[in-house]
Structures are given as structure tokens and as C-alpha cells.
Image (cartoon, rainbow, N blue to C red):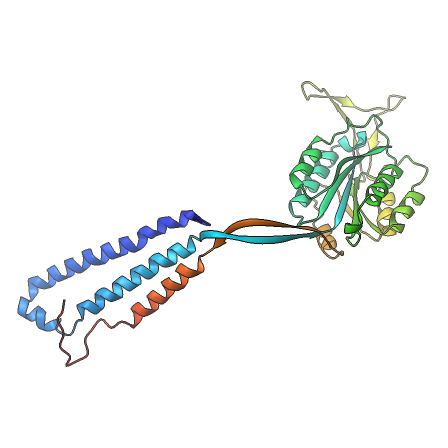
Length: 345
């Protein structure tokens, strides 16, 4: 036997304390009455009291309370076989790890804020498969589609701007990589909605991504985008790898400080063509909670089912018995019917 809520077993002391208090204060009450009335007078005053009935009431009441507490603690006895179905959508997240994502116009910086939002999103998924693509002007699959959210979290923590050699951004790369990943899905997941959620500051150095986007959306993939940054922009800091101290800001070939800004146009275009929505994060407290409601409306598919053995809940039996005993205790009279004769003990 195991317990669902073993901490509630401490409440078993409560009926015992109540019974002890009732016995103690009842004795004191009798002692006080003995000071003012004779034994004969007390016998006459309590002539219609049915002591046996009152004892039965107390026994049934306290026994019922004990059984109720046992039921609340959730006893589990024996075992049962359960089958759990896993349903959801396929969600690929494309994360921009170009150098401009280090800008700090969104605290703590664009990349860390994006990772924070992705982690919060993952914590609220229910059965959906999730994968991670990192990209600059090239892209690679950091984490394949999986329902193992702990593994996904580890891959997300490792994401950094040092993983890809080039700092420029080309939206063709994540769109084509997403098409490749979704194209490898098996027939068993054919009915599940496929969603690409792309995080970026919008800077794109490619000649155009229309064809790659059309191929992806033509395969039935929904494309949602999240723009991170501000219109005013911010410089791109350079930190010392050893001390973490800020050294300077990135400059161009002429020595001018580079200011990176949110460019929402491409991201908005991508979401519109992909039957999705565009979200913006301009401040550290901005969120993308609306995306979850959008995800819930998409078609879901059963990814599989699992059978496992578990202890069977048996809380209903002591709970029902406890309630019955309490009801019975309320029905037992504590006084004799007038005119009846019965021993008082």
C-alpha cells in the first residue's frame, strides 16, 4: 500500500485529541455539578440520559472521522493497467543565433529573452512534439522533433551565437531545413498540424526567401514569427570570454559602431504567407502567450499510446464508510424515550 497524500495522515491525531478533550471537559463538568447537587439529585436530573447511546454516537463519529481522513490521504492498493494516449502537433522552433541577437535593447539580451520565451512555451505544451533549429546564414537541426521536453531543454540551453561560424542571417536556411525535417515525418503523424515558430530580429541578408517559404507553406506548414528588438535599436556588445566584462561594441570596416534594429517587415510577410501570426517582443516583460491559444486550435494527431501499471486508488471505500458512520452517529439518540426503563451504563 502507498498513499497519494501521506502528509494528511497526521490528521489522524485530530479525532483522538477531540475525544480526549471531550472526556476531560465532561469529567470537569460532572465535578462542578457535584459541588452544587447531591448524588440523588444528579441521578434524577440525568434519569433520561442514555449513556450507552451517547457512547455509541461518539464511537461512530470518531470512527467515521478516522476513515474520512484515511480516504483523504488516498490509499492505493493493488494495481491497474492504464493506457495513455499522446496527442499533439509538430512544432519546430527556429532560433536566430546571429551576432545581432546579442543586442541588449531587450533585457537581458535578444537571444536570452528568446530562449526564456521558448522555455516558458515548452513548459505549457501538452503532448506536442517539439524540435529546435538554429540558424544564421546556414541552419542545422539542434534537436529533432520529440516529446522528451527535458532533452529539448538541454539542447535549448546549449544554443549560442558561437555554434555557427557566420554571423549574417539568411531566412532561406531555416525555411529549407524546416521543410526537410517535416518531410521526414512518418505516415503515422500525417494528420498532425505542422508549425514553424521563428524567432529573429528580422535582419535578413538573403536576396529573397519567397520560393523557400512557398515550398514550406505548400506542404501545409503553418508559419508563425516572433520579432525581438526595438525600432531605436542598440549596439552589439563584445564581452571578454574569461571575465565576462564588456570590452566594446562591434564596428563595421570603417570603424563605425553598428546599430542593429528590429526589422519587422520580413517577419510579418512570412507570417501572413504562412497562415500564421506575427508577434513582437520589444521589452523584457513582453510575452507570446497568444501563440498557445493559436496552437490549441490546430488539428492534433495521436502520436502513440503507452500502457503502464500503477497502484489502484482505493480512497472511495474508507471515505464512503466514514460518511456512513457519521450519518449513523447523527441518527442515534442520546436520550431515552420518556417512560422507558434501561440501565444508564
